[in-house]
Image (cartoon, rainbow, N blue to C red):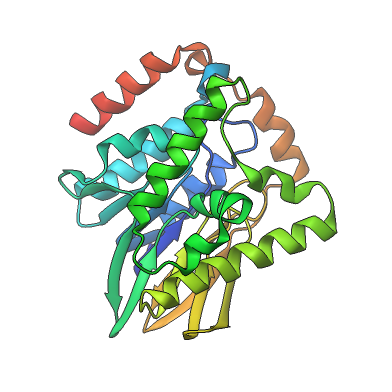
Length: 282
């Protein structure tokens, strides 16, 4: 018997990291099948293109993509906001196919409030190299993205790989707390300086809803978390935001997950993308 779906005005997901062993794709698929959102915002790092060289792509990961495309083919408006692990998609920003939009950031008006959505990886660059950028109200988010891409290109040129300071937050509790606080305050400062009422991020895998006071006033900061550890999403209904937490898989389910391999796992990444494109066009 088909599960009854919940009507939700808006859902935000981020940091799913499809294509990695840590991704809880089956749990996400169950969640997607349980909702009927008018708007679905995929706030970065949905497909972990950095990790595609490992050629790991189980059937459950493909089913998540197919479910999202199925939603887009119906009445759900889907926005795919680019992140750092899928930054290759930034060259396709402002593209649209049907109800699927690829963007670098997004502004929506919800109940009279201006809400700014973006992944947030550019703050790694700001906090590491030039915090003053957050206070420069004239600078655009696309400029910050271009700066981040340029720095990653230089970093790869010297064999150091992409810049992703968020990985460091797990080194110890003290550095984690400091990084998260700096990230949230930097995001809030930039958003309030630009006149937004709320800001919605991903990137740091830390689900949160809270008010932050800046030099330019108060602003609501929200983060959708991730589908690696927290299995969380943001939902907006009846003019209210709330965090959703999906039940975590049991230990025996996790053990079975490692054995849940099929022919898709050994496909080269180009073949996987061809299959995804075929599913989208059908």
